[in-house]
Image (cartoon, rainbow, N blue to C red; front, side, top):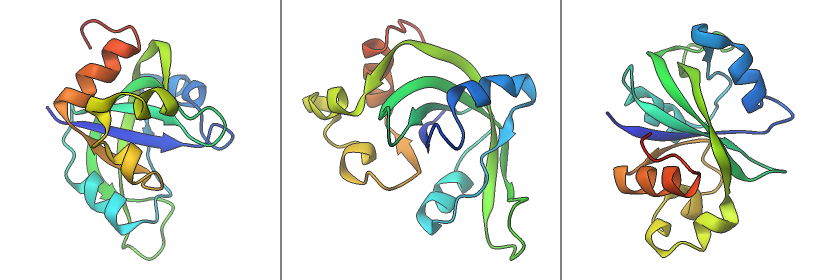
Length: 140
């Protein structure tokens, strides 16, 4: 299993919106960045990801699971953009803020710290475990 981070502005698509989709999940559509698209092409069904509220909250608020591998983005007429489907798994008992992540030395290499504009990014197993622990999840 690999780990990822999905960033969304809560005013556009929030954790609550993701949860409301239930087990059917939702396409992670509308991504128009080549690097993020290529990251999604690496994902496999069953991989886990952090759901991150950007802009106002700037915090990891939940955990999602990839339910469909990369496929054409239904919002793209050009055919060059891909997306995956994800479903909500669990909220973090305590959101983990970007400030906390930046203040944690062993998370300094995260893309979230070094490439804040990338909307979909890989997360190392060590960073995954650390953020889950910071958020109050003992066994993600």
